[in-house]
Each structure stands twice: as structure tokens, then as C-alpha cells.
Amino acid sequence: MLTTVSSRHQITIPKAIAVMFDLKKGDVLEVERQDNKIIMIPKEVILEEKYPVEDLEAAGKVLSKGIPEEEVRFKSGNDMVKFFKNKVKK
Image (cartoon, rainbow, N blue to C red):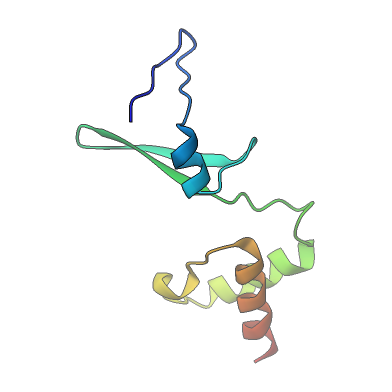
């Protein structure tokens, strides 16, 4: 699939790709360079409006205990909150 860079350095993500990754208006993508490629990775932004401060503080406590990075990769913010709440209870 091809797309064009606009005069404002914007691109349109082809519909098939947007549907495949369930991208919606306002979603956040991390953009990075890998050799001669531009990589875009969908990200969930964790905002205090969406997650209570207590949940974010619980996450901070658990992370400060040195959990391996492999254990703290989540598919969604809700998965992250469940994980940290369970760890804090233990």
C-alpha cells in the first residue's frame, strides 16, 4: 500500500491498516526509525482522568520493587491496573 506525505508532513494510514489495528481518531502512535524504515507502534496513553491516582500509585510501588520488564508488558491499561492491584494485595 502506498500513501503520500502532505505539505504538513502528515500521512493517511490506509483504511485496511487502520481497521487491522483498530485505530481511531485521536489514537497515539509511537514513531521510530529502524535502519531505513519508519516504524509506527500503537500506544495507549495512561491518563489520570482514565485511571485513578491510587491505581497509578500502586503501579509505582510495584515497579519500584524491581519486577522484570517481561512481566510488565500489557495489552491495555485495564490489564495493567488489574496486574498491579493483584501485586499490591499480596
